[in-house]
Length: 381
Image (cartoon, rainbow, N blue to C red; front, side, top):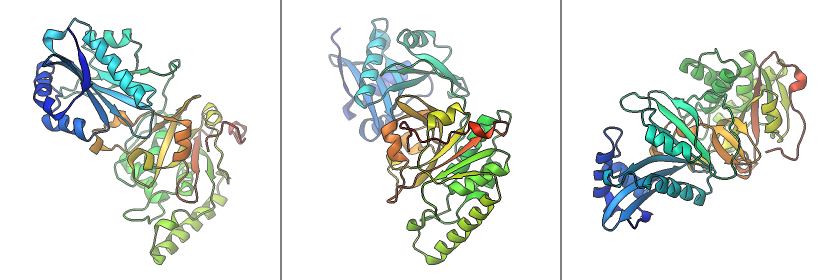
């Protein structure tokens, strides 16, 4: 068998559908899905061809602005199984991910598929989570990952994930995740997401509903019993450049002034700085929410809140509460996203004035001297 590995084209649609129907009884890709993956998606669909026959394919999805790739699917024709094609397709997927500057490749597999699990684990993939009720028949999915560049020892992820339920509640969603990480028994409910938004919003933005300011989120966390460290590089009020109406600008100023008055009567630690040492912050038990520009993730120049879940010598790991379904993404595609230090540093500077802001939560039982206040050469922003 002399195999050719190449990118799929529209001419392969019929063969791909036949292969899909042969290999899977549910959760099948449709003609429309294949067309999207071939022509428009941020993805690579690689086929294995022997003569005029397609013997199999692998589909790799990429997450813009991050170093993460996802192996969405591998399919092998019945008559081609047992010949090592699965390993070759897996190698193709990893090579493709590395070519896109990805350091991690993740995948999902059914627990009742021991052949596939064995293939992945033999090739260095490790189990790191279970996604419940993932498949159409409500079966769970095992989540596996491999560090395909400079392997790092396994780490534990402690921050739960919560998807924002509106386009304007990224900040409250991140705050809910941080509170749950510090208080595992705490419930995460949508009514809390909306209540926090009501408390923390600056009322107006360029269009639509207002977003949450760093000051508003810090106060919302403080009212709920957490120790809070607020860092903002610009005094504020923020985001005025995106509002043309003078009446709206005045409302934003009044809301900001009230936030500042409340902060002075709280024990929120307020630092006018653009330095955040994430390594020390996480080691001290902090849960940092960071304001970023969403441009590198979605090509939309909007302020957006994410929560940092981990940090190592190469990457900052994020939960992004906003799931872009137009890119065929699911919740698991937005969790623990590895972002290079350089890319993260650029994300954290919002707008022409390079605004940098963060809100870090700590459990109350920690002493105040646990808060890292130093400026480090390794500081990310």
